[in-house]
Amino acid sequence: MGSVWPVTAVVLEFVIKLGFVAAILLRRRPKSASTLAWIVVILAVPLVGICAYLLVGEVKLGRRRSVRHLQITRRIDAAGRRRSAPPPGTKAEVPADYRHIATLAEAVGDNEPRGGNRLNLVSDTDLFIQSLVEDIDKAKDHCHLLFYIFLDDHSGRRAGEALMRAAKRGVACRVLVDAVGSKQFLESPLREQMEKAGVRVVEAMPVNFVRMLFARIDVRNHRKMAVIDGAVGYVGSHNVADAEFAIKPKYAPWVDAAVRVDGPAVRDLQRLFLADWYLDTDESLEEVLQIEPSVVEQGMTGQVMGTGPNAYNEAMRQLALATFHVAREELILTTPYFVPDEATVTALCAAARRGVETRLVVPGRNDSPIVAAASRSHYETLLEAGVTIHEFQDGLLHAKTMTIDRKLALITTSNLDRRSFELNFEVSMLVYDSDFASQMRFLQTAYVGRSRAVDGEAWARRGWPRRLVQNAAGTLGPLL
Figure 1 (cartoon, rainbow, N blue to C red):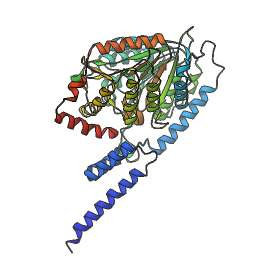
Figure 2 (figure 1 turned 45 degrees about the vertical axis):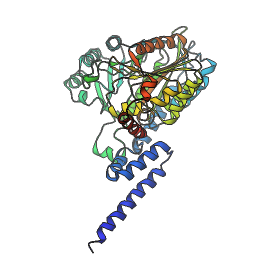
Figure 3 (figure 1 turned 135 degrees about the horizontal axis):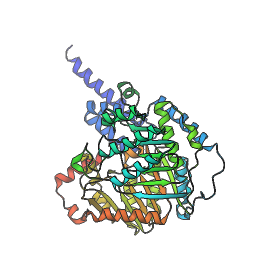
């Protein structure tokens, strides 16, 4: 009788593993790379693999939250359309070569390109905080801030004090921060002081045991943006934190880039904020969409695109691929976390092989060792194709930017990895303007000047232990 139990246990384990493999294969919109990776993990280490799959295997926002977010988005969009015809001067000027890029971005984000914007690139953390504080101090109606990370440090206190001053003037101040990214701030004295002064502080996508049962707790609101009086906006990679980044000082300074927006595109940033605020507060603020931002004469054309697991989550990946294919002379990318899928690597290699000067700038030291290893597993393929890889040496390059032929620019909160492409709520801005693209390219080349170029021949000769670790991490890339 005793000999039956081992056999039963083996059969039961086999059935359970087979059931999970079948569940993985039956997923909606399966991706071959992640499907194969999950199957390998579950078969190799069943207990760990099954637990991991249950926690983070599916891109689940939670059914109730997904349905509610869709309803909120539709309501906000409908409110946004209840207005007069667009004011003169907002006609978008999109070059013919990039119209299909704009069409794709509009199909996903439901925001068409907007003309008449003044766009200022901000690459220094202190200047970013100073500019934000100055705009908050000028606010007369509302201040809306949405950030993945808000710290109780010098920068956080400067922003917090400005918001408190605004609240005392009667300005409605609303701050939405991610529950995980801003955990320390949410438990800090600064948050308490801000709320006592009349600033609304809300945690986005709170984490708890009940939510963990029905949704992935690592699906986060990774957006970083602000809207002041419906007239001025900010979007980019800056968090509300010092460049010294107190929670990870070992990798400081963190080097970021953002854009200050003055013009019609601000309204599209407002729509994103309102939808996210509504989701976590049940408070509708549709009336502020009736505010018409000023139009800058002969201003630039910009297009805001929000992405996330509640929408068509192939959007950012497909936008990236489309821009790679449209490049004719030059393609420059900066990203802190580079864990691409096969299609992204293929598109970058194809660009380099057809004669496009293709440059990738990443941190030399990354705060995630496994991501750094997975990133480097792709170096050899890229280098052989002619892609130039630069590893930034002066801190952690956190700016997420792209320029194409000095004519098209992208500034985003999204990294070149699966987490940004499929899991997190992100926001991006495309700019169809050669002057702005040239400014961003100048910033990118400054990053290159502070980087070390990876030598292809030396890289090919690296030792087998490094190759083994990197390629093993690369195999897990679809799960990172």
